[in-house]
Image (cartoon, rainbow, N blue to C red):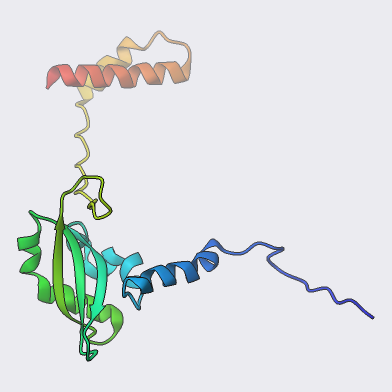
Length: 170
């Protein structure tokens, strides 16, 4: 009997996404999400502004199968603003499905922090970058650290001096 050996290009390794795909699909389908892309790419589907205020929790289907209800989790302060954007959210979600799957949108409100499963953590707006220090402050810090022979120590002292002198001026 000749034994044939299979030449594998992966040498026993498999992509992590392939290993997790069936589990992600099962978890998302248990919450009613037939398309898991709605969960994994929520920011792309809803847009950055809306995704920063809410996230999808569940999809429930009616008895006759005529449209589904999307449940979104949000904080109490954001719910009235999102309520006015229901149609826009439904259009974007239905574009993800490819047909008019979602006919209703319902909001569930929760506190932003807490111990329950439904606690909300949404992306906050990025902080603006601090203004660079004026050139006089950088020159003064460079003069103060000028006598240090170690390059890395001198650069660290210049940075420290720039930060300290910049705070004093403002």
